Length: 328
Image (cartoon, rainbow, N blue to C red; front, side):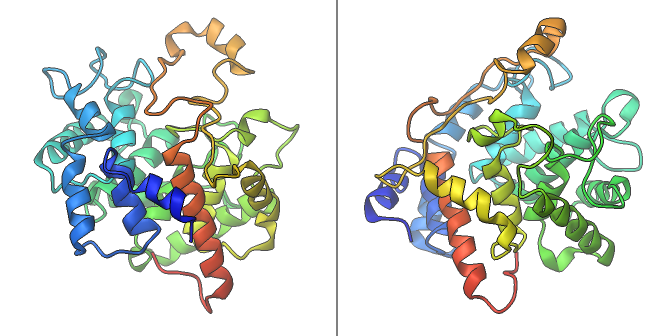
């Protein structure tokens, strides 16, 4: 369990999303709990989620681009990914309306989601949308189910995925993230095999070994969007039940080293590589240069990073004492 001071900080009323997620994800309170219901009910009214919703334009989305994708990260697609992290569901009419419009914007051939040009599914887009929509409560929607099936179909037979034909790599984590929040009881045998192979791909590389050392992977960031770092990998693998695997040792040690004496973690970066190795690429592709979006300032203790880190540590403790991997 986290220290009392850290827990009290996460349970502060000013950010009901964090309070709700701490009550359920750290303290294990059920959705029927009075405090849980009160916290979730306040998410729509104050804090980060309320501020994002208040910025919707007259068309019901965010940003000037009608395709809801550019400029990154201030348009509809990216704001929906953040909202999905903050505890809102389609039980809120405004979220249901946003989700339906979002899905209508990015349909894919075959009945799934994540379609880019000519409705061809795009891996990162599909994986991110599936994860977010499952969190919003669309796990039984046929469009989401078809997206998950497509992710299985396009996975590398050896495990993992490839984005833009770059070869399977740790940066292509979005497909695994969708399954990390999809109820285990709904998995098909092919989904199980796909996830097991993908998890093995990440574990073989100890969540960070791929070519030359890449500094952004060691900087914890939020919003996640499509960026990878070691904490992203830990969140996925522990959520999938691999918390006791010894190949997480390096990543868990890094997590422990980055924890401050007061029990909190710093937000190292909002977007970890915008000014690093990607800077030259963005100079050549200015339309793709992101517009920064943040809910917390970098360089200071982060509730979102701390919450994720503590959930990871809790899953590791549970997995080491459990007789079987935890269910979703």
